[in-house]
Structures are given as C-alpha cells and as structure tokens.
Image (cartoon, rainbow over all chains, first blue to last red; front, side, top):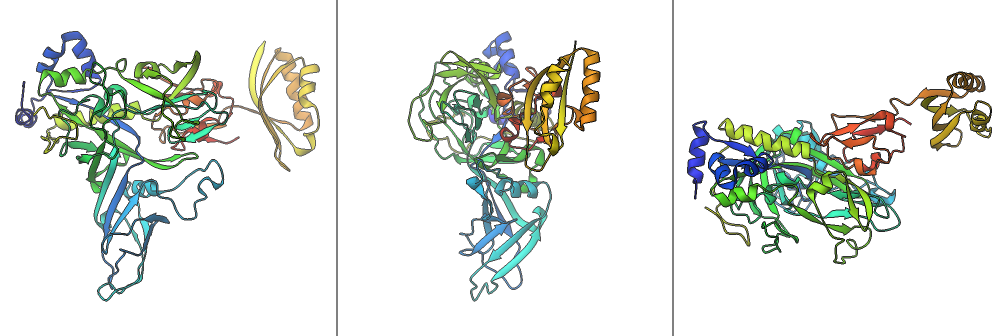
Amino acid sequence: MIRTIEEINARIKSGKVVVATAEEVVGLVREKGAAQAAKEVDVVTTGTFGPMCSSAAYINFRQSTPKIKCGGGRVTIDGVRGYAGFAAADVLIGCSALPDDDPRNAVYPGLFQFGGAHVIQKLVEGKKVKLEVRAYGTDCYPRREYTVELGLEDLNDAVLFDPRNAYQLYNVAVNLGEKTAYTYMGVLKPRLGNANFSTAGALSPLLNDPKLRTIGIGTRIFLAGAEGYVVWPGTQHVAKPQRDAKDLPLSPSATLALMGDLKQMDARYMRAASVTGYGVSLSVGLGVPIPVLDEQVMVHCAVADEDITYPIIDYGEAYPMGRSGNLGRVSMAELMSGHIEIDGKTVPTGCTTSRVYSRRIADELRQRILRGEFLLTRPVAALPGAELAY
Amino acid sequence: MAKKKVILSFPPRLIQEPVTNVLIRQFDLQITILRAQVRPRERGRMVVEMIGEKQNFDAAFKYLDEKGVQVDPVVQEMRYMPEKCVHCTACVAVCPTHALSVDPQTRELCFEPSKCIICESCIPACSYQAIESQF
C-alpha cells in the first residue's frame, strides 16, 4: 500500500493533495508508468452524465391542519402520480412517472414532455410544484383532501434515491429492423442507420475501478452537485462478470444504488430528459473519487478509450424479444470517432452520455477535493463480488 | 455560378402550378428539392438549393416575386439552443448532412446551419428540446 485513506484526507485538509481526472492519468501513466503515477497522484476523479431511468426522489411534506395521511391514498405532484404506500407524509416520485392524462405512445412516437423527472428538476431549480393528496381519513389523520403549492424549502426532507445507476458496461444499440425504433438508447434508424452508445468511457466511474477495490457501500460521491453516497449494490448488479486481461468487464456487470440530499443538489448537474417514443428519464451527474491506495489502483485508472469494448446489440428485435447474441464488440475510441463498421457497413455513432458534462463533473469534484471541501471515505462493506483494497 | 439555399413559400392558389419547372427550363437553374411540405389550406413550403448564373438568379427571383412566391434565406429555420443542450451528441448520428457534429477535442456539439436541410431528424433524437424547427 502506498497511502491510506487517512493519509489522503490529511493531505486534503493540509492543501497538499494531488488530484487528477481519470482522463489525465491515461497520459500520465503512458509517460511515467503506473508505479510513478501512483506515487505522484493521491486521488483520481471520475464523472458521468446521462439518462438514468432508475432515479427517484422521496419527500416528506409538512402536515396540514387538520392532519392528513397520504399512505394508502393517492398523491400527485404537478399531475404526476407519486407513490403513497408509506406513512402519513412520505411520497416517492419516480423519474419515469407520468400524469394520468399523458397520451404516452397513443400518439406514436410519444413526446413525454412532462413527468417525474421534470418535477424533481423543478424542485432542484427552486420552483414550486403542486402537491395534491386524496386520503380516506382516520381518527388521527381526519383530513381527506389537501392541495398545496410547495418548493424544496417547504419540505421537511427531499432525497434523491437511485436504485440502479452508474452501469459499469452498457450496450451499443443498433436497429437491424425495417422501421425506426424509439428506444431508451435514442432514435435508432432502420437497417443499421445509426449506432448509439451510453458511457463516459475513460471517465466512467466503475470502469476506472473495474474490480471495485475502492468503491463500496458507504463511498462518498458527487451526486448532482451534492454530497451523496453509494448505499447498496445497484439492482441487476452482477458480482462476477467475464473480464478481459485488463479486468474490464465483457458481460453485464456492476451497478450502484445511490442517495443524496436533493436540497443540496444543483440544477446544472441534473436534467429531465424526454426520450421520444420511450418516456421520461432523469440525467444525473455522478462523480466518484478513487483513492490511489496502491499501484494496482493506478493501473486500473489508466484505462483509455481504446481499451474499453462494448457489445453491439440489435434493439430492433433481439433486445425486445430477449434474444441473446451480439453483433460484435467495438471500442470507445472507435465509437467516439463518429462511425463504426458493422457487417461491412459504415454506421454513424451518437451518444446519450455527455462527455462534456462528465469532464465538468470530474473537474468539479477535483476542485472540491483541492479546496478541502470533499473528504474521501473508506467503504463500510464491499459490493458483491469485490474485495476492497483497504 | 452561384449557389443559394432558400425557402420558397407558395400561396394555396399556386400549389398546382409548375413553378419549379419554370425555374429550371426558363431560367436554367439547377434545383435540388431538399424538403417540401403542403398542408391543406396553408401555404406550401419548399427548401431548395439553386445553382446557376447570377443574372438568371435575378430574373428568377423577379419571376417568383411577381407570382407571389415568398423567398426566404435558410437561416433561423432550425434553432439550436446551446443553453438547453447537454452535448450528449445523440442527434449527430441521425443528421444526414453533418450539420450537427462533435468537436473531436472538446466533445461539444457543433451546429453548422449552412449544411442543414431542415429534415428535422434531430428533433426526436434530442431529449432536452435543444433544437426547434420554425419550418
């Protein structure tokens, strides 16, 4: 071990810490080698920004007089249905929730102009939303109807909770079919008209720590401008994926469940997405700091866009029908060149993850660490399949 | 030889008339129709690229003016709003003319209006309503 987490935090507090982004260490390791780079850099910052449909917020509203119990009743926020299966004043709003009167895909392809993600974004922007509660009334909570305009400051609590974010590896989506496919990977034109990918590549949090040696339950993260935490493995987390020689996953792999205080979040790092023909999603900015505890951490952080390969999947038929099989693998560097070759055809590429924002987040996290505002944490438990380096 | 990309707006009474044919045969212009749209009771609109001699252009525009066809330059038809754009670049892959592209260094989205043919393919591809059509 080169340094401990306590030593890194002491260097952050004394203003001596050295932080590089995951893109910068690629060149550093090429130039000086991983051993030297690991000696020079204390922390590597990563970042990603893209639609993460498995995002939600739960809120606790201040009680009305007389009191009302939303649990078991019905709640909408700006017309979007919230989940009211909890106690008196707790409501969960999923980013993909829609107003009851949204035409959805009845007018195909649907526009999905407003949903849960827009409600969450409005709150973070400091705007008011309209909460409407219908309850059945009890002796202790006699009120049956309650309508109120409220903003983030009026809520007792507001928490972003994402059961599955930060996919380690994601598909490249194409369409082999005869008609345009409107998917969560974007608009896919027929007959290999385009190929869409969704990853921050060399900046991607979990690709810089592929074996999850430093990231675990309790890791403090940058979440949409706030301090957040990794709270659990994400749903569909795969503990033991197939890996290549550089430990990068070749099959579906790790995901993270994340939480953070919505009241501390910044609208610059969060954006509601209206995905044509698919639905509403929330683009969330995530940054994970990686402490350079040993040389192996730096070897992993040196992952370059040339190293990472993704499977190409047909979303015209294979994906919706649950058929396995991919059309080959392609590297991030090839995807970023603007076109790839599939079956001898040149296919233009588009991305749903913003590299610009991913860089901005990795840099913002670096600045916070350099200013002594963000300390690193030792995870309290490893994620399934991982062995912590601590 | 000059080259111009313009929008021709036809009042309903002209929709049956072979105006494009006249532009080609009488004024010796090479016309490429990039986009055409006719809606009931509304004016018809056509995005065309015209190539020809300068004096022929002048005569053709005079003819169009006399006929009552409105000629507008293609400038603000597609509005790109950088403040709404997150630079994900999902629009780039569906743009047939490379009017939308990615800067290889900064990875920022670049919009080059002169290459745009107003096909509107980018509009459903954008999840953030960062591109609007006024066509």
